[in-house]
Image 1 (cartoon, rainbow over the protein chains, first blue to last red):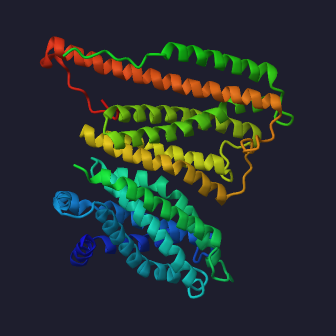
Image 2: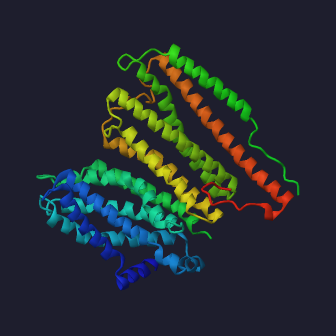
Image 3: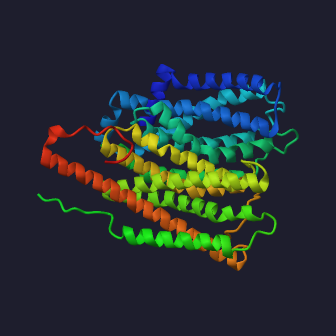
Length: 218
Length: 246
């Protein structure tokens, strides 16, 4: 229900996702000039893609609980006869959806603008890696956002806590994407990094599930 | 109602003396007993300070997470204070560890910072994460909420410590000397004894400082309480906003 509310709100106001998409496209342009390269491939491309998606995700993470805080949604939620972790799942699912929509636009754009090799071959592997990465971003992002939204400097606290927590997931993502974007690759991501990414997602999902109750008590 | 004056200073003197004795013994062993390293020479002696500092600070972070879990379970703010002091001390030890590690890296590998070195990199990530602990506390005004959120953060961050080490270690080949394998590593016996005593010394130092700061914080709050009862509310200056639990 909260998920539906969030998605409807996003559809009506069109606030977060367009900002994330625009941000990612602009970042590709910046990378083009910053690296002074027309096309990139392999590990460099993986790094650029991962960093761009990460920072676009941070924008979404910052916005995730703002409506709740400004309009008293937390109180309403606490009055409702539902389990508190429902909020965690709904918000993580909303963030996950945002990220998927973001990638539907910005990954093809990345393929057109920067990527030296064709996107067709590595696409199935890339989708798999990005879905796992989205899961990690969504879970950790929701947790961090729920901590940060109650603080005074929430736009600062969220990213500085979130980035170190996300580093291992990003290492795994970038390393998994690297080989499949290399010229002449088989298109299948390395299993070791997929396993690490999946493990990280699972551990943090359990951890978030365990501590999330404390963030809503009031 | 007369408040019983509790001090955390109980046993502090004994602990401090034990720390002093162990660290002196460790220093004597480092300089007069442990053999010079075959290819690094005298520089290798920083190992006896650097590695214990790093290990103790990581254990301190995990210790802080366990204390924070204690707060979440009981809701007693003394646990939050303990957790705060533990993390605060571990951060100081961690920065000292990073600096000594950097000096050692410069002396033995020729660079202040080596990226293809998972232990160093994961240590830096953990330190960066815990550096956000104080800003997080500082930006929450309500003391009860501050304790709760800081505790949630500590638990998550404490669990992150081992995970992060696994992830970063897998990412690179290591050049760090692997002295801490389960089989006891490749250290000759005399070095190992020296190392273990140094480790004990630094751990005792951590415990002493932790206890000392707890005692100081308790004493301060008791002085405040006494002054409030004796002199009345209006003589009290308001407490400035702080990251520390009050």
